Length: 127
Image (tube, rainbow, N blue to C red; front, side, top):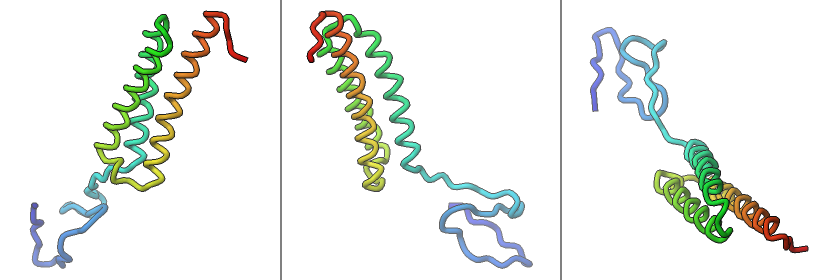
């Protein structure tokens, strides 16, 4: 921890606890502290999953839909685990539920698309 030099004409109020602090230059140049927030973890997981599932879905399009669904499911699990290990596990309950539901929704959309394309190709769409 760096101790700020206190000059004779200054009043020292002790070290700042949180948030934006003023630098030695003055209050017009604040020092920011980084505090990760759940929206960053959620957004990075969701965008990463969207891109990865699109690539995997497209590359496995000519295989049996079960292979596509399982591969996308495993990738969704891995991205979810990565997200929760980087900090989402300590976030609020709403963020954890919303993250799991959003990742699950993307996986379900890809799974339904894989099944629909397979049934359309086979010609036996269930009614």
